[in-house]
Length: 422
Length: 213
Image (cartoon, rainbow over all chains, first blue to last red; front, side):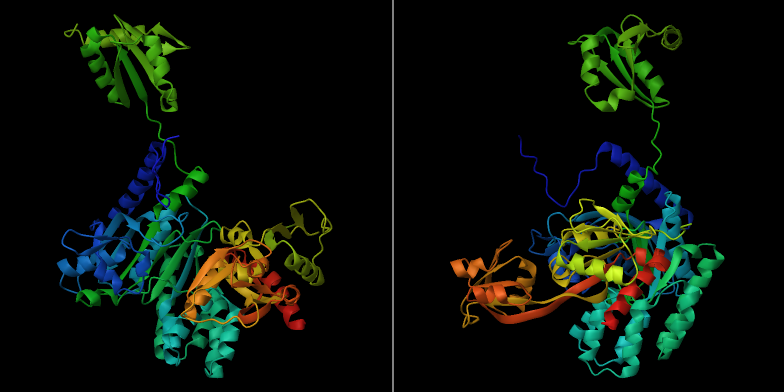
């Protein structure tokens, strides 16, 4: 057995899967282009210093390298941050409407166990310069449409607003460590531990009650709108509720609200989200395939105050689902294999060119091998099982039922076209 | 007539499952096929609305995270050792015990002396000793953990302790308690939202049974 030098956490994509991945990628990039998003790409390497100060991604989870000048580099761990930076560098007017789409590989979870995937492919959009709920609505609608276009019907979008929790916890006197723990409990809907946690703090009773309601603040939007309003204890929380209801109204008018439910009790480990936040799930799989939201404060780090909203789709996971449910049409791609005696090379080339008008054609010389042996060799790879195999040997023959039979009709067509070659 | 989807519950084999099944029966479900010695893998209740299956405890969060089970009941120790993306909705009063550091009485922790720790719960042990800045060498042991200090494989062990009888019989004692452990009702993040009407009654029934005791 030879060593295969495979690194755990990384995957080969076989040619069958690659075709399917390309199919989804084209579907999505066309969709985003039709909505006016321009595709961009940022470098694979990023400055490590930038992420070392970024609390969204643990620096243990970055892939690090050192450049020849001694700079520490990191493999791109996130698509949104570099694109926001790119927008800040090239577009200096904060009011400018900028719509970008991307398709990129990202590298994360360096310190995670080997069985966890570390290289993922993401497609998505970033919409800058628009603060209106309609902008959030368009972004979420595109997230839903991306899945629908891929043939997924079992779509579930969790929609929330981090402003709601942040404003509430901001009022309370908690140290960062306590705050983080409480966040995690709320996100896990860990009501038991929240109760124990609250018992040990001297948060006013009024707030304790609200905090205990947060994990249960999910479900049909109509049902929980009233509840949310009742819980808003300051204008900033009310504003979060207003924004959320406007986003929902937008989706309702587009006829996409049936995929959306509210959840006010969830956050995102990417701490840059500042308002609307959403996750898209398919089937019952506990991990989202889509993650997105509003990040109005991020661009300030690059020297410009600019509202923004966007999302990313985990393409490999989406592809797994589509493959499992056979939602990707098999591309019927005509394949021809042309075997030729050395003296027939020009004719074989002409014939192959003809075949390539409607599919692929590959040429094999029979200089050192018999036609039958060559066929056997070719068929060793199952890829060729569906190919038409032709033989040019003073006439045209076609492989059929384990032997070559004269192909007269094709032959006369070939003679007409290649008359001057012969 | 059955238009509510079936709810699947993953239970950790053993003591926790026994109590959980009793609790389920107490709150009104009946499982005619189930008997402790049965070789069946999945048991449906008489209405077909709820089904449960028994798996090894570390597999419970896996089944729930992937959505194969909508609900699961498993000890907090398992969730601490193998974190999963699930909702930990209820603390159940089943399988109450403590996660402890145990060893010979008088064993002291000191930053200038490395401690050898044997445990099935390597992550929990590492986190704990990191949090108190105690240098520790960890050795993974899968069963009869008490043997390790007795035979000298390790200075102390990290394990769950219910009564402490096994420890005392071997001359060992609890040195510190890391945390309290009880069983958790965990829920798949998507099922909770998409099968709300079927799942909520089950969760509420567990909640009431808890507060009733």
